[in-house]
Amino acid sequence: MVVASTSMRVDVVSPEAVLWSGVAEFVVARTVDGEIGILANHEPLMAALATGTVNIQAGEDRIRATVGGGFLQILNNAVSLLVDEATLEED
Image (cartoon, rainbow, N blue to C red; front, side, top):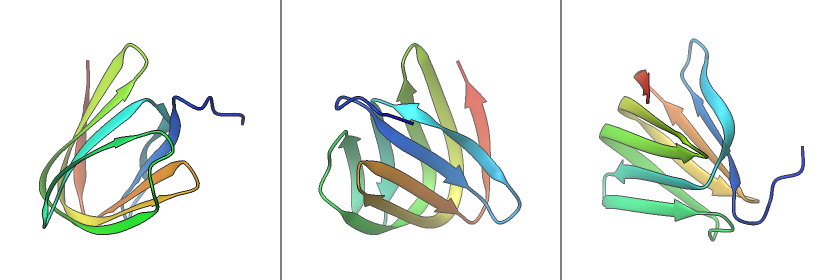
Protein backbone atom coordinates (compact mmCIF):
# COMPACT_ATOMS: atom_id res chain seq x y z
CA MET A 1 0.00 0.00 0.00
CA VAL A 2 1.36 3.42 -0.98
CA VAL A 3 0.78 6.05 1.69
CA ALA A 4 0.85 9.74 0.76
CA SER A 5 3.42 11.94 2.49
CA THR A 6 0.68 13.71 4.49
CA SER A 7 -0.60 10.46 5.97
CA MET A 8 0.77 7.47 7.86
CA ARG A 9 -0.15 3.88 8.64
CA VAL A 10 -1.77 3.41 12.08
CA ASP A 11 -2.46 0.12 13.86
CA VAL A 12 -4.18 -0.27 17.24
CA VAL A 13 -3.52 -3.80 18.49
CA SER A 14 -4.59 -5.53 21.71
CA PRO A 15 -3.55 -9.02 22.84
CA GLU A 16 -6.87 -10.32 21.47
CA ALA A 17 -7.17 -8.58 18.10
CA VAL A 18 -6.32 -5.76 15.73
CA LEU A 19 -8.82 -3.13 16.90
CA TRP A 20 -8.22 -0.61 14.11
CA SER A 21 -5.86 -0.44 11.16
CA GLY A 22 -5.72 2.15 8.42
CA VAL A 23 -4.23 5.34 7.05
CA ALA A 24 -4.50 8.54 9.11
CA GLU A 25 -3.34 12.13 8.99
CA PHE A 26 -3.06 12.83 12.72
CA VAL A 27 -2.84 10.90 15.99
CA VAL A 28 -2.98 12.26 19.53
CA ALA A 29 -2.03 9.92 22.40
CA ARG A 30 -1.29 10.27 26.09
CA THR A 31 2.04 8.83 27.17
CA VAL A 32 3.38 8.56 30.71
CA ASP A 33 5.44 11.70 29.92
CA GLY A 34 2.48 13.71 28.55
CA GLU A 35 0.36 14.09 25.44
CA ILE A 36 1.90 13.72 21.99
CA GLY A 37 0.59 14.76 18.59
CA ILE A 38 1.85 12.74 15.64
CA LEU A 39 1.87 13.79 11.99
CA ALA A 40 3.23 11.93 8.97
CA ASN A 41 7.01 11.45 8.77
CA HIS A 42 7.49 11.83 12.54
CA GLU A 43 10.89 10.95 13.96
CA PRO A 44 11.18 7.37 15.30
CA LEU A 45 9.93 7.13 18.87
CA MET A 46 9.00 4.52 21.46
CA ALA A 47 6.87 5.50 24.48
CA ALA A 48 4.77 3.94 27.22
CA LEU A 49 1.08 4.77 26.88
CA ALA A 50 -0.85 6.06 29.88
CA THR A 51 -4.48 5.17 30.50
CA GLY A 52 -6.57 7.61 28.48
CA THR A 53 -7.92 8.42 25.04
CA VAL A 54 -6.14 8.09 21.69
CA ASN A 55 -7.63 10.20 18.88
CA ILE A 56 -7.03 9.23 15.25
CA GLN A 57 -8.00 11.50 12.36
CA ALA A 58 -8.44 9.36 9.26
CA GLY A 59 -9.83 11.46 6.44
CA GLU A 60 -13.38 12.43 7.42
CA ASP A 61 -13.44 9.83 10.22
CA ARG A 62 -12.40 10.46 13.79
CA ILE A 63 -11.63 7.32 15.78
CA ARG A 64 -11.37 7.43 19.56
CA ALA A 65 -9.85 4.56 21.50
CA THR A 66 -9.90 4.47 25.27
CA VAL A 67 -6.77 2.56 26.21
CA GLY A 68 -5.61 1.03 29.45
CA GLY A 69 -1.86 1.34 28.95
CA GLY A 70 0.56 -0.22 26.52
CA PHE A 71 3.23 1.07 24.14
CA LEU A 72 3.44 3.40 21.17
CA GLN A 73 6.01 2.99 18.40
CA ILE A 74 6.64 5.36 15.51
CA LEU A 75 8.87 3.96 12.78
CA ASN A 76 9.02 4.36 8.98
CA ASN A 77 5.90 6.56 8.77
CA ALA A 78 3.84 4.04 10.75
CA VAL A 79 2.35 4.30 14.23
CA SER A 80 1.78 1.11 16.20
CA LEU A 81 -0.23 1.27 19.41
CA LEU A 82 0.22 -1.99 21.30
CA VAL A 83 -2.41 -1.65 24.02
CA ASP A 84 -3.16 -3.74 27.09
CA GLU A 85 -6.89 -3.17 26.58
CA ALA A 86 -9.02 -0.75 24.55
CA THR A 87 -12.51 0.17 23.40
CA LEU A 88 -13.19 1.99 20.13
CA GLU A 89 -15.65 4.70 19.08
CA GLU A 90 -16.01 6.07 15.54
CA ASP A 91 -17.68 9.35 14.50
